[in-house]
Length: 271
Image (cartoon, rainbow, N blue to C red; front, side, top):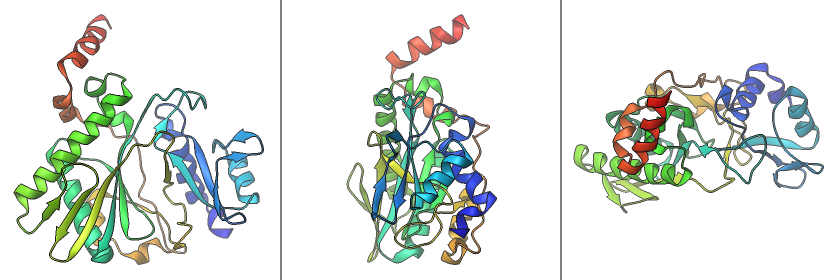
């Protein structure tokens, strides 16, 4: 497929699959157009997009879309996760992409107010967007290496987003107190959902969406309101570069439990 011959497309997908030099490996999969379903293995081996050769093998096997886990694993050991990015999806039930843009921009605003100013954002390829706080941006004190605490942290952030939108935007109405939140403005409705299923998969940045054929293009957080579906055509899509944040989101430490902080602080003191 000519689109996947583009060097910038390949590099973006491979960088995400390899966690961009971050922690651990991501399990990968692809949508196989020949069998019309997801495929996690090539032959008897789990799919790992760690090289151009692996990418080409997937393409020759029928890949038309690429997926990566938002969980991180040590050396392809999928029974022992290291942790995961915090991921939310915004999907428009009513109001189309226009309302999805509005809600996504508001969620970004709420996260910034809570100390997370640089989430990764990408268009889903359909009627919504995906937001990620990469694992490397989460301070050790906020989760102490405990995956269950990451889940608790994400739930607390979702609750904060709901409170922020309710208090700061009188035109917004929210149903629900936890994921998924139903966010309404008049007759327009979006769902804000947390993703945290073990071995869960997310359409890779710059992959084609298998249903729409549009590109799941990364976007600068402050440019979401300006995004047009024309920006996601395979011929014109250009990626905003995702890099590991230079700033750890220190504001997230406030969500840590006292019992979490003690061992981390002891470790830092020893170091």
